[in-house]
Length: 90
Image 1 (spheres, rainbow, N blue to C red):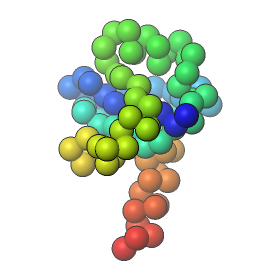
Image 2 (cartoon, one colour):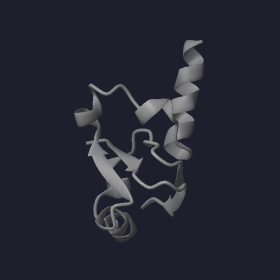
Image 3 (tube, rainbow, N blue to C red):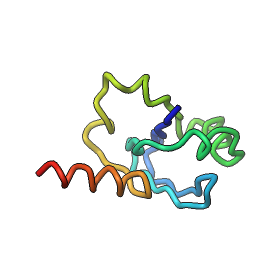
């Protein structure tokens, strides 16, 4: 099931996904869609969740929210594909 990561802190964060790809999230930003294997069972992501820095959402729970919180976009591999999709619509 696809996941999204939300930065709950007031600072930008940079961390590596399970694949080794970097993910940068601005304060309050929500990532694009990520494969479950990128976040599930990853010790560093679990540590950030335990410290209250990020929260991992199932994408289907966010279906009603319509995307990143407050219109903020994330940076990283998922955000790049999301940006490319948005440009194709214009």
